Image 1: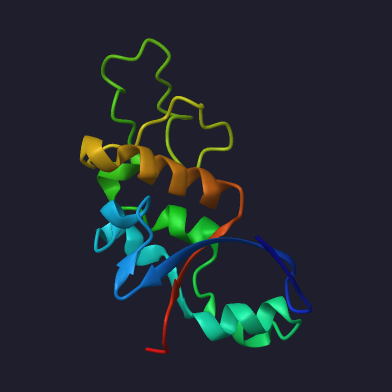
Image 2: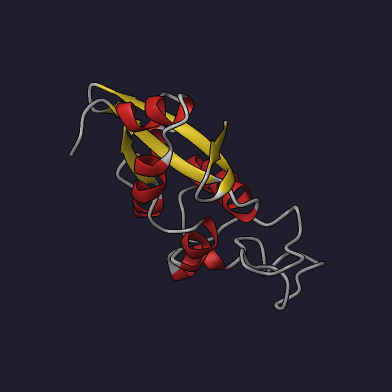
Length: 139
């Protein structure tokens, strides 16, 4: 989703909805994981207000920029999981904040069952997208 804001212009958002304390099924394996702590949590009302043109409360609630989320990744996730056996491994490029991070990058230090989700989150953050968990009520 792209929200049109006065404060930040076009604001790319990836929304993950939470219902009864559980995230939508695709992202549920990351719920409670340290990497997911970088996801912004906002009440549903703020997203609805932004859709109707009142974006200021949502912008204030966003928190860390996507580039900052990449820098806050746990150290093991900043290293490629397959670096030891990859013939193309380049220490200068095979990490999330590198300008030319290769497409084959796999975050290290995370269970194989959630590695694809962490990779997707890293890709979204690299594109400047805010990953936002939309919760039912204010916290």
